[in-house]
Figure (cartoon, rainbow, N blue to C red):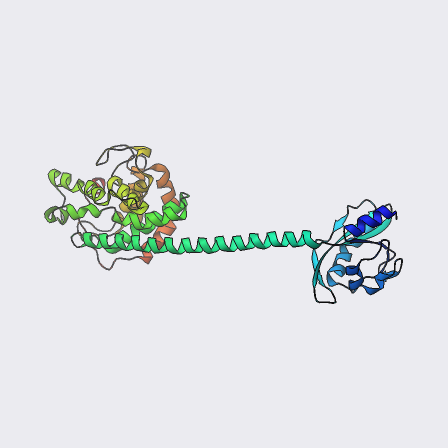
Length: 359
């Protein structure tokens, strides 16, 4: 081997060996201190060397290297870095390459040195950055959950205040939240917004706190004048929740204001139609009507689910967003599971004047 190559391999901290058979190699280049330390016999150039057994990693590498050495057209094979410990207890990083060059089976072993240490430092820094980011994300998640719990407590206290006057059951508003979250999930909402509608949906009728008792608690069908007053609960609820920059309360305001709007534009209070109605309100409209129909109230018996679905299907495309209603129908098994899980202990409630077509 020319002297220039000897010098080059020495500079690169590389030794080159030629395979003689399955176990024996001949050193073609000058040995190096690190290679002599790994294999003392290597200090004598041209000495036949047995490499098996000096390194478990190298032994495993030979299984794949043998395929390269048996095929002249095979691409060179790199072992990737591995670490050995020398006689002084210091770690040295090595890398091997198996090459079939014109029928010669060559093994190159290189000490990686500073380049490897630099790569390790980069990887360690990246790992530390990743751990730091994961820690920060965990802290953000923890604080977000704390904020979520505070927001949910505020929402539940508002509902408790309205519940003093409205005899609609607590189970009903809980189911509305769960139904709405299930529908939002199937529509592809992200988890944050799914969690928000679960808490915001139960506040859909919070404006009833501003409706007089003689109308709110009337156990019979409302007169036209009373019905007009009852309709005011949508705007009252929106005004109660207005002015906040908290996303949960912004969504709750949209729901309170718009859950009686109709897909065909004949709802109230503003006569919005189609996609002008916030999607959250379109979801809650379906959830609210379904739950009102299938549960008993003082002014009506519980409808069989098949009858309730028939009534609602007739209103798809007029009262309800037809696409969301289709998703709701697909979710009926999950909706039934929620109904079973959150049962009412007793029936109660005000007349369902919001949905005159079911009376």
